[in-house]
Length: 314
Image (cartoon, rainbow, N blue to C red; front, side):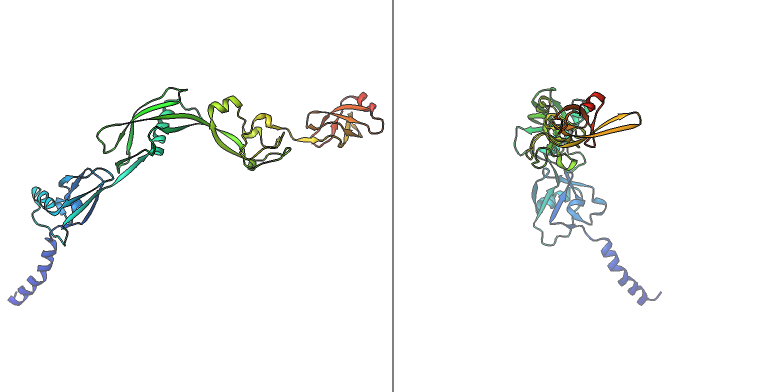
């Protein structure tokens, strides 16, 4: 190989060798999740030194400033003596965090009550912590908070718990009040008396369990298709006494009275003297003779008569 070719080859390979041996480059801003800041966190292109520890990270959710001299000293201690620095005098080091707030703690305590069999199906605890705006910065990990213990006696209105925040050395004690809640049906909008309720008229809202037990709770199946006994305002909690079966006969209405005798059915007209739902007794008066008989209201608005003597009275 000629001298000219050797020089050309050397000139071509020099940039590749320089790139391969490029020094790590110092970052100006660093965000970490672990409690230790490594060479790889602090420098670009750290290579095989990336996992070496430099110093402790700030607490979760906080930021610290590290002077260039401190970075250089920590790097030298792990064997990194040279690195690139493009005008960085101080490095801003932040530690990512997961915020542990009241809703997260409520879920944690509720899960424990379920596991212990204290919460029955359909019962939801409402917790209010003694400390307002409860918030802790935890490590950005899969399980930022764990429950050490929960002290609660069924029927009590108070609780206390000890929790462990990830990244915090000592456990934290919290306390507050607890109220068991259940869903109860409420009117969505004001409705007049006689309204036959449909699912769109009703919404379920949480009410205190003790209140619900003292007043009685009815299910949707006990309300839909029945009518209001009296007018109800929006937001009214519905009880069994608020509804009745829909009226098929109203007072003073002209009705048809049916009497079946074998294959034959006798019909006669009369005036109803009272309101009645299907299956309820209804008095019927012959408007000409003024005689009154009693029958049973039918779903179609007619009256079923079982006594031939009653029909004869018409």
